[in-house]
Length: 155
Image 1: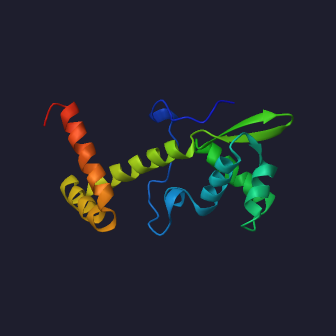
Image 2: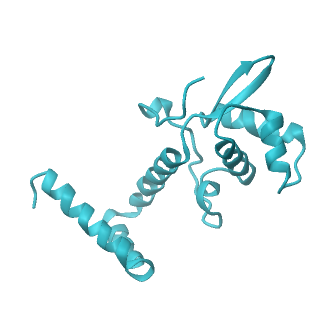
Image 3: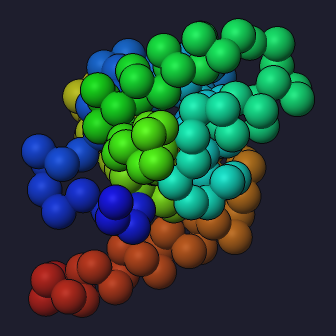
């Protein structure tokens, strides 16, 4: 089993929902609630783990049957979010991407979808929202834009 990493190409990338759940937070925006809970448990364990170990971590905060845990784990394997390997007679599951890489991938998918509304409107709204919520982050965005323009020789 390999270490969690960022996919080398689009074919290796997890297959996420095409829809975004605005009422959810973080991972739950691009995965179902149970899928998000299971993935968070796998990340928290931090190493290949059996369905039982993952279930034991989830059941502390959420009433769920072991069979449901296995079903969700297998769904995440099909989506390419988790890897699965047989070790000592039992399947072990591991995240194919660490949390940071997964969030970067999911965020990119979200931004690409939002840009379909029209890049000008989205850029303007992004600046407005950052100015309201986090002026320091707006400054960081401005620095990033200046750096990218310099790299492209456009500033």
